Image (cartoon, rainbow, N blue to C red):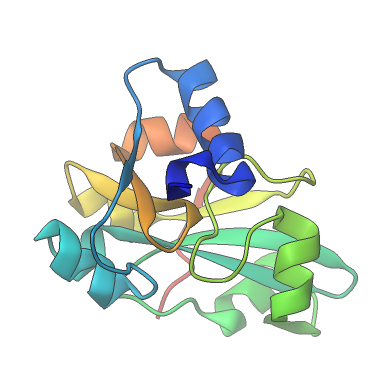
Length: 159
């Protein structure tokens, strides 16, 4: 069975195709578990890799799409949300909220409706790459389309 037949990958691909028929998922030879691994596999800058990070804010969840060379700022998220209890979601929370495992979290195709913030520093790149349901499966998209497909709010959320 190839990775492209896995349910999480099919779920991500379905969302991409419904949005734009030209978007496609690609299986990589090497793991893209980290932004650096993905950048090396794709021969692109680390910053062009989209990290999909699930954040727990009190009892709610937020997905932050962050440039691979940046760090998500929990302090900025505290200010934006006006909440004190802000932390990275656990692996179990990521799986139960998105339907994806860490390393393969796609910006689209979640099993729950999760609000999304898009890091404004991703706008530096013509093309950006994000996971599509598995650490070795990615898709290429541009910044404007990423905002459209995720219905994300553009924010300054990195340090």
